[in-house]
Image (cartoon, rainbow, N blue to C red; front, top):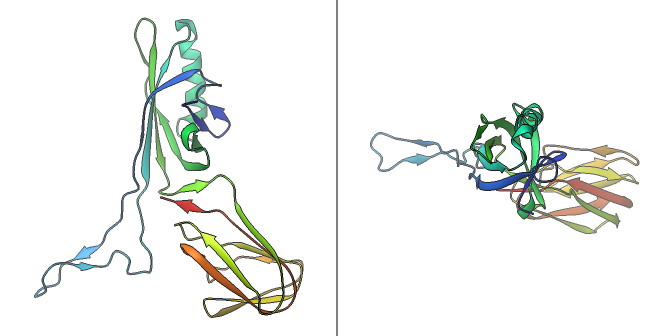
Length: 214
């Protein structure tokens, strides 16, 4: 289908909307250039804090409604009540492994003799996120290496352990006690392969995180 799902409601199966137009806007790079007197060009401070940031992206969908004219306003009121001003998880049928998240607004209803038109616009976070969380679970002992692969967006995994285990990441040691879980900003995965080394202990380590991409 060529539709879109907003949380639990689908444009086709719930509202019988025919999508006539969609635009998935790009996340705009947030730049920071400054001029230094006596220096050619600009000084680029865009990623001076260690990462590149992006502004929100806009999603726009235009739909036609071909039901009987007597039902148009009821359907329109249902859509407005569910979407207008609300934050929703947005999943495109053509890209249903990911979701966007943002606040939706619904345009005024316009109509001709046999068809009505509405536009839904969404102000969304810059990253689209995998529907399914990534889970890496391994039985480990001292000296073992675990590779955690991640897409573009930095993410802090939830770590769970069945034993008292110490692991190293980026030259920092982290301790996880038996039966506990933790997150730490010092244990943040970057893009690509992230290496975790088991320093001591045995048991099962479980890493859970959600990956995102532009």
